[in-house]
Length: 239
Image (cartoon, rainbow, N blue to C red; front, top):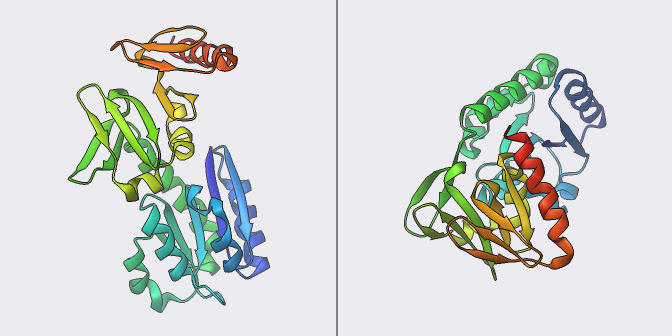
C-alpha cells in the first residue's frame, strides 16, 4: 500500500493530480489531498506518507518549508515538487526532492515519477538503512529478528547484534511506521512493543512467542489466536 499526499492551494490542480494517479498508477494506494498547507502541517499523519506531492508557492507555509519539516524527521519520505516556477528548480535540490514536475506537463510527469519511485523501491527493497548514535547500518530484512520499543527508544535485534537506534531515527521509525514498512516482509506485531520477523518464530503458545534463538516474547493471551493466524498466513505465502 503506497500512501500518497497531495498539497496544493489550487483545487483544480488537486483534482487533476488525483485523477492522474487514480487513472494511471495501478499500485494499491491511498490518496489524501490538502488545499491548505497549514492543514497538512497540522496533520499528525504527515510523516506517515510514502510520497508527498508539494506545490511550492503556497500562502502561509511554502512547499519548501513543508519539505524541510518532513526531511528533518524522516529523510526517507519521497518529495515531489509540483510547480511552474522553473527558476526554483536549483533551490528545490536543497530539499532532496525525488522529482520536480511542471504543472503544465503533469499528465505525463506524475505517472513517470511514481513509476520511477516504484522501480527504486523494488531495487532496494531487501535492504534497509538505520542510524545508531555511532554509525549507519545497512541491514537485510531477513537478518532482522525483531524491533523492540522501550520508552521513547527503539532497539533492533539482528542475527549478530542488538542495536539502539538514534533518537531522530526513532521519531521517523515508530512502531506503527515500522509495522507498515515490514509487514509485507513477513513481520508481525505481536505486542505494542514488539515487531517480530516470522522467519525466526519457533512456537507460539497462549502467553508467549518463543524464537529460534530462545528469546521469549510475552503476549496477551487474548491476542494469541490472531498472532497464530498471521503466522499461518506467512507460512502459506512462503510455499
